[in-house]
Each structure stands twice: as C-alpha cells, then as structure tokens.
Length: 361
Image 1 (cartoon, one colour):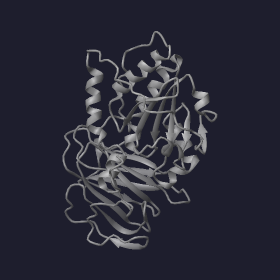
Image 2 (cartoon, one colour; image 1 turned 180 degrees about the vertical axis):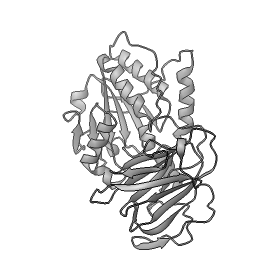
Image 3 (cartoon, one colour; image 1 turned 45 degrees about the vertical axis):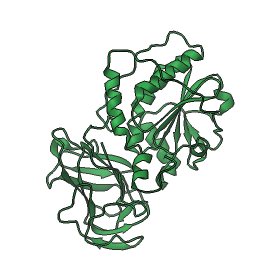
Image 4 (cartoon, helix red, strand yellow; image 1 turned 30 degrees about the vertical axis):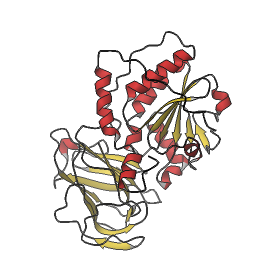
C-alpha cells in the first residue's frame, strides 16, 4: 500500500474494496470440513505505544504494560466504512469466544470523514453496533501512525510478550486470523480452546458482499470525485445548479438541483434535489448526514424509476422512503434477485442533505 498514490486505486484499496474476493474465499474456508493448520506466525516487531488515543470507550486507557501477558487483536476501523463494518461480526465473536482464554480485542477508531472525529458520533455508532470491547478513539491518527497502518480495515495480532505476530488488511481470511488467535493463545498457556471456526451469517449491513460487485466506492466531494456525468462542470465550494445525465454509463453519477460541492461532500441548498448512480452490485449504500442543526432529512429512492419494493435496504422502505437522522452509512438497496446494471436515484425532500460517498456490496 505504501507505493499507491492518492488516486482512485488508492481509495479503493485503502477502504478494503479489494477484500471482496478474499471474503468469498473465506466463506468457502469456513464451510470446509477439513482442518487447516494455523498460519506461520513471524515476529513483526514490538507493539507500539497507544498513548495517542484522545479517549477510550468501554475501558480505562490501555497501554503496553497493562496488556503484557495477554493476546490482543487490534482492529482498525471507521464507522461509516462498509469494509470496516463487514468484519465486525467476526471480531465481536472472537472477543466473546476467547475472552476467558485470555484474549483482549481492541478497536482502534481512526476517522476518514471529519464528522467521524466527533466523539458523540463514535459513541452512538459503537452502541448501535453493539461493540462492547475497548475502543481507542484515534482521531489524530497517532495510533494509526505508530502501527504504520494504511488500511481500513486492518487487524494486528499481538502475543503475550507484546510482539506483533500476524496482520491482515482488508476483508476476508477470517478463518486464518482465528487460527492465528488460537495458536497465540495456546502459546500463551491457554488450554481447552474450542478449535471450531466461527461461522457468521448476517443479513444486515454487516453481511458479506456478493460475488458480483462491479461498482467501486465513489466519493462525492471534489477531493476524490470520479466519473461525474452531469452536463455541467463540477464547481468547488460554491452553489451551482446541475441536471442529471440522460444516459449515464455504469459507475457514473450525477446531481440534480442546487448543490454546494465541498472537498468531502455535496450539500443540497434547496429542494428539489437528486443524485443518480448507474451501478452493478447487490447492495448500494451511501454515507449521508443532515445539516448542522441535525433536522432529519426525508428522502425517496428509486430503482430504474420505480420504488425498490423488495429490493429496499435496511434504511429505506419498500416505497423508497426514509430519513437521514445522523451522519453514518445508510443501506438503501439490497437486491434479492438477479443482479444487473441498475439506475439508482435518491431524491431529498428537505434542504441540507450532505452526501459523502457511495459504497457497494
């Protein structure tokens, strides 16, 4: 990752998009009847300092001295990243399954968008996601930098002597990670460990992606915006009216109405306002937020010009309606049938909507 520049490929890999294939492989491993030996666990260096956290959830501040003698899983995540959310059922299961054997799981929340730096948002997200293990609030990237990390998600396994012994970037390879946890726990003196690998089945936002995802994560703010298809040129930090493209190609998007496009997001200045995306995947998510006064924003989504019906997401009704009430990731489409190229539109019925990014699964 260190050789990738700040371009489209960088953004996709950084958020774990290339982990989709690895996730599909991992599902096959979980269902295999034959036992696989744990991976070779090399010494990758000493656990770095954790003092850069600006706060901790579910725990008093932790450090290398307090963690000595415990096997630790560090999970780098951010709460609006779909690639960070999909591993959470595994991470939570490991925390519960191996707690009595001496495992400590620590989430390191390192934000991407500016609103993810706000402590109240991380607290609310962690509660909603039912995360009960310690979470270090790494809003200044100090722990991220100490680990020399460059990915969401990323997991690092540390042995009882404080040495990093295994890492994984992106989604997938959950069985391999769990076998590494088991090996380090036994190395640390734990006995009677259940060697069965957890098998996760989740139907919500945290569900594994489909094998037919052809749409990449797409940013709406001009800093990383790609494939903008409205006839008008994208303006920066100023209000401008846009029209939807007539026939966008797959993975192209456009705006309709009066928007102010900033570095991170586009903010709707008045109604009506729409965003269109031509996509190919089972799921379509958007990172959305309300205006600063936190007034809920009503919306309505369509697929190929019609309400999504049974293809609605967890945050939209069959008739396509829904509300943006806090800044987070919203699942708007989950197709139940054949996956093909589809045209998605979201119409906001109130001004002040903030749109940050599209992600798929």
